[in-house]
Length: 157
Image (cartoon, rainbow, N blue to C red; front, side, top):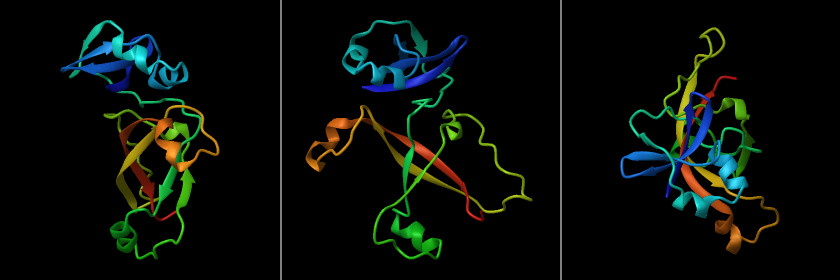
């Protein structure tokens, strides 16, 4: 099942993608759907049908509790930057204000501030429920799904 969050005249709405169209769901966004444990219900809901082509995509989860990223995880990109491969994962965070929708403009800094803007297409893992001290064998049970993320950074800061 493919889920998303779109902007509407009154705010945002969680949607399900079905055969070239969208079906609205009774949650404001996918984050609320996950918090309500509504994934199974989302598969069955009969909501308003909208055009997939006309969708104004919002961030999938507009107000996540955390955005945790793993840096330096692609060997070729690490070497391209002239850096050494780390011996352990490098973690960093992003703020929810950095999230934008799929077709939104990316506001880049003035060239007087940065002249080294870089982007990376990333796999985004959406954690569907609270997890702490989870065994590796159980970890997939906490993943709600996957999406793509465009990580844009000023490399000269």
